[in-house]
Length: 360
Image: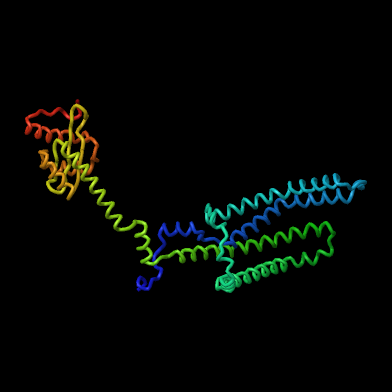
């Protein structure tokens, strides 16, 4: 019934997956990247934030204390600005660099390397107001809205619980000095932010799992789609038939040129046929010049009769040669004795003497 109604009951084929990937259809969670970057940024602030605080403290002391400025011309302002920018860059750029690297790694972990330059081209259909209005009020956007409200509620709940646990310390801030309050607030706020980031990360992992499941469901195929894909990949049936016909003609041409040169054809007696050629002056060992089964074997025997090539029935030998020796390859050493016996019989029929195989 599923096949008749067109339900997508079949797993996607590798070709279907590749096509979807080339079109940018991949399983990706924006929330996962955002949560990991938020957590990474907070941890960097926890580890390297002291350098930023020290920089701004030293800068404030230099600007508010020390000798008074006696001039404020353009070169002086440029010098002050350059010094502030370079000093801030030394403490901020490592954090930005690590965050940028983390963003790249997060995306590579989700979708791997994917370069789609056509996605950069403008798409006129995206500026259609009717379609844009439909996207705004779509079911997917409504679900995203609910999920966003849930995330805000989660953030508020985590922040409330963290503040509630620290209520004694917060109420005791009135009895602390300004430096002690300044040391408590960043540490407390960073701790709360890291806990919020961990909660968002858990949600993001769940969202990523859902996106992967949804992606697999979207890629599933009907039986008819699989048939159509196989047909398209294999090509037009007429072209396939023509290709097979050409291959048969080429095979027959090879038989027509190889079988007349053979010294003997070994058969099975009707299912297999192997044509052997041996020229002591040019070959170290006899070689298989043609072999076949069924209709090809019948064709080889027919050509052998037409060109007076002896046909010898040796069932085990024919099976071994057909199975183990490719066309154009020499006979293995373990088969020399059996081949020599056949060639000796053939040469005896022709009134000739056969040299020992493997010797010139």
